[in-house]
Image (cartoon, rainbow over all chains, first blue to last red):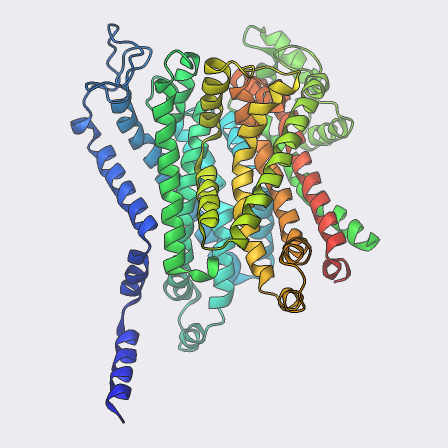
Length: 295
Length: 306
């Protein structure tokens, strides 16, 4: 064995011990766009959490001496029709938009993953039933389904979370069912079954972790979509109601002042756009690093 | 082909049935008494009972469902609770504006998406590719209602070129269709790019290139034509997105279509109209999907005969 061979083998061995997490990090770090998106989102989340302390103004405080003022040193994004500071409202609104996005995807994701696992693992009639229901749900344009649900439950941000969560369910169910079907036949699952591991444990401990990489990718992508849908619902008056500083509701509030004070709608719109964009770019980066097959 | 068609049409029946049950059950899921809802808040107990008998709400659910289905097949959905006019009439007036808007948006979005996608794929890794994909990625994240307001600000208020809202002339179509189509154009561009790159790797494309077929012909004839099959499917799927998107865009531009009618009726709790609209939207979506599948089967014999 020559020296070069030896180093080659050593390198290969080193490659093998590298943990999946480090491998992921190594790939993800190289994707500068996704890294930047991730850092921006982290900053936004921190700013949203700290909004009560860092927002320069009370988001609900009226100031009738300063209505519809353009951006200035004091009011970075100007003021709205009641003299409220738009920058502070956007900061507070980030709390709403981020939690709506996270909660709805979490709710829909958990339900969808569970259904997908059961469908893929059990097969048979239960699989057909779950997948047919998912087909019907997927056949509905998301926002239409959400409006139907809001029409039943009534307008409001809480109901928007449920409405948006429901149409994330079939997406995750279908995804997880697919990976469960292939993992079910993996040798290590057979081995676990052979030594008598019960079905439920088999699903949760041996199959579920294998489906997670693709789930994580979709979570990031779905949060962007969910934030956009929730903002749309608020904009058409079915979601968060004024005076809530929800971004979509702020745009609805400001649309009467188009041309007179366009900044009232410009900055909340920009906030929605950049946040959704960041989640999508992060999702693209995660996909490339975690699960190249999804490309 | 006929066998495939029959099977495909038969396949939508269960989906329709599930949706009809959902739409029928909708009124019963609402908090409160449906008869009281229909009769209105000022109605006396006697009126409410009359409405209950009139609507057949005192009969068993399965009888009610049968009647609902029978009426729905004939396009009969009762009267709007807001205007007291027949729901079929309310919806009939709104149908064409939404259809025209959707078609206009789809037309430009597909064309632009195809061109951007092909340009990106053929100039892969060059600036054209990067520019195209930046447009595509931004387009997907762009809130349509924000784009609508930005355009009104620029083209109507500042430049005075286009009307802010309304319906009638071609000028009225420009901003709503651009707004509605942006997301679709973006998705189509991304999708066309990857479909195109995949087909360009095929042996027959290499053969065409090797035997000296001009590059332009290879792109448009050998590659794009074969990439069109997945692209057609994508167009169909995007129609559903447009139907949903029209709800928001019609609100921005006060477009007299189905989307704004839906928002108005949800706000007014006009349940008879909501019922009919959800059924109609679902039906439209299912029919479009069916058409796409049939088109797909025409284009790809493998599906027809399997």
